[in-house]
Structures are given as structure tokens and as C-alpha cells.
Length: 632
View 1 (tube, rainbow, N blue to C red):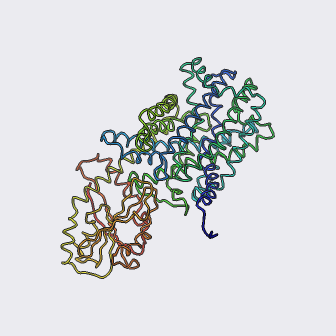
View 2: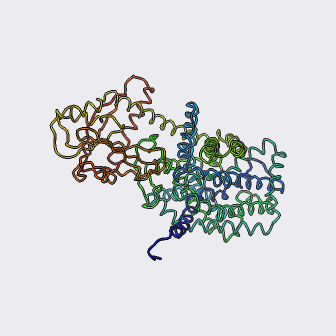
View 3: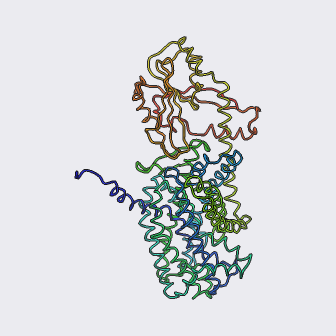
């Protein structure tokens, strides 16, 4: 056998280990740092729970089954099956099931449910860094009781600045750095939990679901409210799906079942065992995580916790980048600067505007709420709402993508709903105490999305009304002076004459020898292979209609892709071709279609969106822009 031949299975195995390490370092950071604050919030004075065996067993049973059903079964076992060409997330799932929804009213419902669920993830992206890093820094109170709140807040803000500043190096590079650190974190967390369990092994009885049922029967409605804090153990579970495009489903599954799941369970049960032994000590109940180690180990644990919470924030930040890129490609957001940070994984991107917007919002929350307990009051409503919406959309995926029977799809959906809805209702009680913040943020984002989409449709209709039919332009082209060379006219809509072409022939009375009408279409599929990217239609008199199709997670690089046009028998010298782009100035009228004030918002967004030259990767030195005014 030729030694130069590469075994694909061997190559896959070699990539699997670094991808798994990277996934552990990025995807599971959020859910992996929940032990810092989740159990202590369940036993906070707000709920007035005693630290006796019945209460501890009940809470631990709820935690165990929440993690098992929501993360292991729902996201890892079921939802991760519904990848859109390797991509995950609310937007990808929505686009995946949309072709199977036939009822127009239902299409609208699914669209808004998907958009709202996706928008809620931005709220998670703001709160997670704030509560994670702040809760780790609060461990300093255990080692240094005299440290005041202002110092802890200041340290938190400095750490957050360093985290967001690192994003420009890319998710892959950050994951490679964070992977070994988070593996150490899970190892330490599991070890200190196991040591505590060994001292009180009876705590493992809490795995029995009857203790969770008894907890509700004993506490009634008050017990149901505790679910708002129990839910903190699964926050970050949704990023398992949202970040699937960064690392793939298999590395995420391996990382979860082989390391993350066992480690966090050991730690939660270890904290529960500690409360059973030392529940009479107020300082232990106030922060059980850092009391799992002796006094000499608190500072080292604070340091590794700080590193882990930086990683926790990385998961939702990376998810926000992916979500924004998908929304831009699908036409729900204006064009923003997007940097691809990996040559191997196209899903690894960095969006500066989103990064620093998240930073300023996160710092505002830290300065406003100042402790993790206050932040916990708002945490969960965004994620729990997203999880309910994911379940509703996943029903269509079960029936149409994996072709499950009605009975099986209904059984799985009901199981998820039975868990999701109580969590949602419990978190809804937090709305007056700060839960309104992520909801307002989500409503603001979905408003921008819908306004931009509607405005683009109005702009397209206006352009089509004033555009001369393409066949008339071609027929009249003999009356214009012909200049040598090739002109590539960017056209937003296939089959129509671009306004730049109309303006050029109308005012300059000339045309290039070869004219290419280039349209870029973004598919609802995540990836489009290069072999299926091109659609070339020869037209009379040396006109050519060219359509380049991309998936919504593909990198747009027209400079590279048009270099293949000569293969389609188009007489073009790529090195001498001129790109002609239209530059529309949009003005508002009372014509209708959208409220006047919303049109003004669209005009502002349009004016500040990234230019097509930068967005499509068109060479600057070969671009001619032709201006025009369009009324909407």
C-alpha cells in the first residue's frame, strides 16, 4: 500500500481529540460554572428552605433529572440531530423546518417563534459573563472576609475586558487555550465533590426521582418557585446546540458524557453532602462551593474559578457571533464586519460590533446589580423561553427531518414540554426583579430584525418599479457606444436590470463589450458546495446572467469565486474586469407598507450597514459605484 495514502478514519480520529478539547473549552464553560452559584441560590433566604435531608435530597433530585432530561436527552440526544449542514442554533433550526410548514399562518408563527428564541440568546450572552465572573470573584469573600463589594466589582470588570478583547483571536485559538484549563476545572470540581460525597455517601440516594416528587408535594406552589433557581444548573445547555457548527456534534457528545456531566454531578452532590453536614453554619450555606475545600485551598480555587468563568462566557459569546452571521446571511440584520478566524472551520468567526456591544451591556449589569444573587433574579427567563420555543419547532423536525412517527414525536415533545413549561413559569416570576432586562433586549433585537427585513422588501419593490425591463436594455444596447473590457454589475435580484446599469447607459450612452449581471443568493441551507454554486445563463449581445449561491454559514468571497467564470465560456479577463455597484440613497415617503418612523429606522440601518464592497470581498481598486435615490 502507498504510504502517502491518508486513511480518512485516521484523519478523523486525529481531528476528533483537538475538537473535543476545544468543545469542552468553549461549549461547556457556561453550564460547567453553574455549580458556583446554582445550589447556593436554591438555599438562599428567598426560599426559606432548611438544609435537612428531605430538602437537600429534593433539590439534588431536581438538579439530577433537570440535567439528564434537558441536556443529555433533549439537546445532546435529540436536538443535536437536527443540524443544518453541520450548523445548529435557533435560526438554523427555524430555516431547517420551514420548507415542511405548509400553512401560511403557521409559517408566520414558526418564523416569529424562531426569531424571538434566537433574539433571547443575546440576553443570555449579556447575563452569563456578568453572573459567572462575578460569582467566581465572590469566592474572595471566603478567603478574605474584609474585601468590600466595590473591589470585587472592579476586578470583575477588568477580567471581562480581557475576555472580550481576546475574541479577535478567534474561537478556535481561544478554545485551544481554554480547553486544557477547563478540563483541569472539571477534574478539580469533580474531585472536591467526590471527597465530600465519600464523607456522606448517603447523599447519592437523591438520584431517586421520588425525592423530587415529595419535594413538590411537601412545598406545593412555593416548591415550584424553587425551580427558578434549579434551572440555573441547565443554563448553557442551549449553547450545546448553538455552538455545534464550531466543533461538530460528536466532539460535543464525547465531552459531555465522558467528562462534563459526571464532574458537575459529583460537585452538586458534594455540595449537597456538605450542606447535610454543615447546614447549621450560615457562611457554608451562603457559599457551599468554596467551602468544599480547606481554607488554604480557597485562593487557588478562586483563581481556577476565574479562569473557568472566562470560559463560561466564551460559549455564549461564540453563540452570539454564529447567530448574528446567520441572521445577516438570511437578511434579518444589516451587513456587519465579520472576520473568519479559521481556515479549517468556517463557523469560527468574530464580529467586532457584537463583541463590544455585549461587553458594554455586560459591564452595565455588573455595575448595576453588583452581586451574583441579584443577577440570578434576572437569569433564566431568556434561556427558559428559548428552550420552550426550541421544543415547539423541534416537533416539526422530528416529524419531517428524522421521520419519527406521530406517537414517538408526540411522546418526546410532551416529555420536553412537561419539563420546559414549569421552568419557564418559575422563571417568569423573576420578571419584576430584573427578568425584564433580557426580554426587553430580545424584543428590541427582533424589532430590528423584522424592520430590516420589511424595509429590504419595500426597497426591492421600489427598485423594481423604477427599473427598466432587462430585455429592453439588451435590445437597445446596440445604440450605445461599445468600450472594450468586461463590466460586472452587482444585481440584488436575478432577471432584473440593475439600477447602476440603467444609469450608466442612460447618462453615459455606452456599454462594455461583455456585461455580467451578478446576483448573490444566500440559501437556507448552511453550506453550498462549490460545484453547485454557479448558475450561468448566456443572454443575447454578450450579456450573461450569473448567480452565485452560498449557504448562510459560507464565507462570501466573490474575488475568488468569479475567477472560475472563464470555465463557463464567458469571454472575460478577470484581471481587467470592472465591478459596477449601485449605491442607493433611500428617502422616506408616505406611500405605506410600513410606519413612517419604522422607515426612518430602516434608513438609518441602511446608511450604516457595511458596504457591498467590503461585505462581498470585492477588490477595491476595480470598483465603480453609481449613485441613485430610491423612495420607500
